[in-house]
Amino acid sequence: MHFIAPSLLAADFTNLQRDVTMVNQSEADWLHFDVMDGVFVPNISFGFPILEAIRPYIQKPIDVHLMITQPERYIESFAQAGADHITVHYEASTHLHRTLQQIQAAGCQAGIALNPHTPVHLLEEIITEADIILIMSVNPGFGGQKFIQRTYEKVAHLKDLILRRNAKAVIEIDGGVNLENAPYLLSAGADVLVAGNFVFSSSDPIATIHKLKHASLPKIV
Ligand SMILES: O=C(CO)[C@H](O)[C@H](O)COP(=O)(O)O
Image 1 (tube, rainbow, N blue to C red):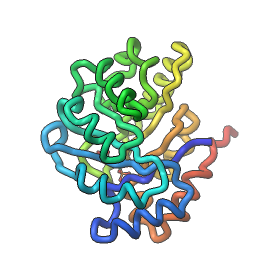
Image 2 (image 1 turned 180 degrees about the vertical axis):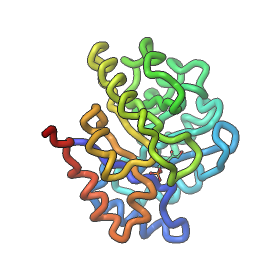
Image 3 (image 1 turned 45 degrees about the vertical axis):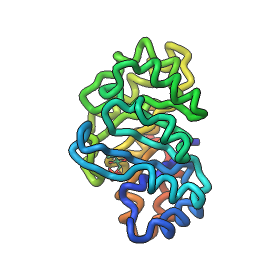
Image 4 (image 1 turned 135 degrees about the vertical axis):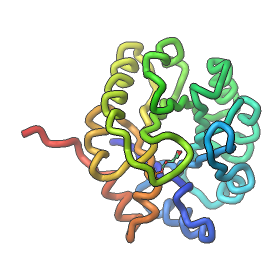
């Protein structure tokens, strides 16, 4: 069964406790937490104070996605603030092998994110060290963007690489995920679906999470 990770970026920031409670009551598996620095991506989101504020209330693992330059400078701080997983961008970390070790030494699961233009084959020498590979299915920086169709093929390539190298990494998809593309992403090999606006802008977020959680593979006729 796949995992669902609602993205806090799309929550109502004037009602964070209500939205975190909704995630607790839902079938969501993780809470996705997007950190943007205004340099690696053209937007600034939130950081340590919000993570520390929600940590006592959220009952699910917090999946921190660092869209920041030189992420290695902040690994221990995010772990101390309550992160369970820390994902850094392939494009942002010069010594990625060392950064993954740093994340795991801090007691967190270590992830690598790929921008839409970054090919999967660049992971060949590092795939066995990662716990999570996050495929960006939009250009990072903003919620509510249109899903990039080419993602399906990329997920299938990544699944092949994971199987070929006997790696343990799970495949997470982030950006524009909805009930139309979810079955095809799962069919291509996705394990975790991040969903921001599709969940938080829906009239019944708990029901929307339920539908994503029970999305089935497309039927072949
Ligand atoms: O990483 C992100 C943006 O950079 C968000 O997690 C992602 O965009 C999810 O939001 P939505 O489901 O609304 O596209």
